[in-house]
Length: 80
Length: 181
Image 1 (spheres, chains in turn purple, green):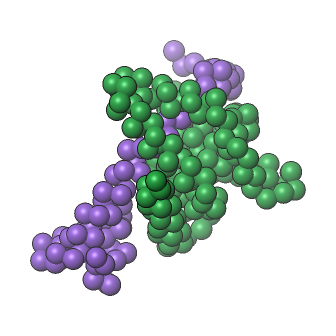
Image 2 (cartoon, chains in turn cyan, yellow):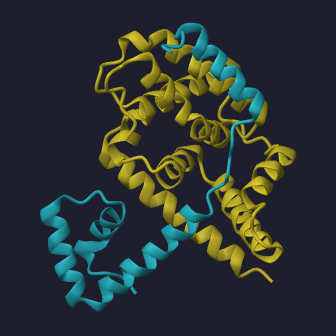
Image 3 (cartoon, helix red, strand yellow):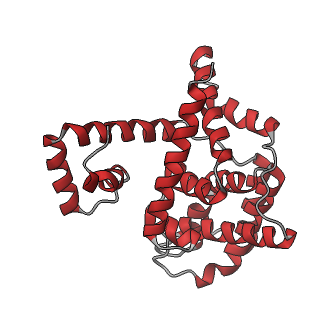
């Protein structure tokens, strides 16, 4: 179900925490009244949660970490 | 947000090292190759420590490092005189990173999480690099529209629309795959 057209991008910015305070309050008030937008927000939120919680778990290899630490150490001697 | 507030060596060192795994993940998403990703990250730190004096005290070290890495990658691409190379992922390394991330789960949960991660990784590989990188920077690294805009050198509005299209394509791919027998 599609949200009200004027709220389509607003819902995404809301979920991304990119909406200014006044717009955020206006949208929250709208969400309390509009089931269509509420459902669209819940649906988008669920998708984003899935992607974010399943991020590839890359960790820099230990050898790379050691090289990077050396690079920093060579230029920035320890202050301690 | 990682800021180089006092701009002391220790602050910079800590801020820079805190970004290492994220930078490596970003480099992997751009290059799809472990050796290239390692070179990119190493190159990034070499350039960063040389240019550290030019960094303003209230600068965002994290987005600065990501921008350096992206420029290094673009230079690498130009140097090779070819477009982005969608070469195969280093499966051995990939298995290693995913395996470590799931090692504390019970076997079934570990299997499901691994399969879902694999789907998302494979779907990301299908996206054009401009879409892939905004997904990585936003969903995996948690950067704001403005921080991403500084890294990819475009207005925040462009980041927003690029992200919107990237998410739609990612969602379509994941949905198609979940319906496969």
